[in-house]
Image (cartoon, rainbow, N blue to C red):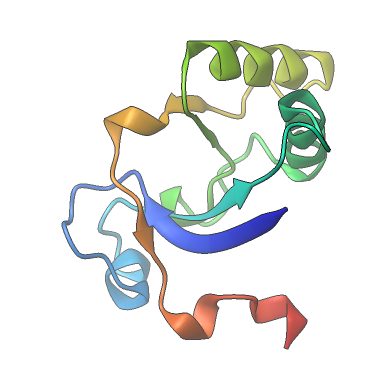
Length: 112
């Protein structure tokens, strides 16, 4: 499993940490890549929802959300959210937004 920090959900074409902090409409996000023969998407969603908050503390920049790749994954994410009492966590379409990798200094921040 690997992850990349980035920005998604906004309209600005080239978001940076500074523009996101300035309220450009993007959310700081983590893209998770995993091997489904090792861990299921449902289990990934259980781990995500365990840490997610339906409250939007700090505005859109820090909201918990899932950008699902397709309808099947969106359905799984919504079901898991409901089972875990996290119905307020939005499940959005990844195809309806643009992803931009965050600056290098944001990558693997907690492992430094």
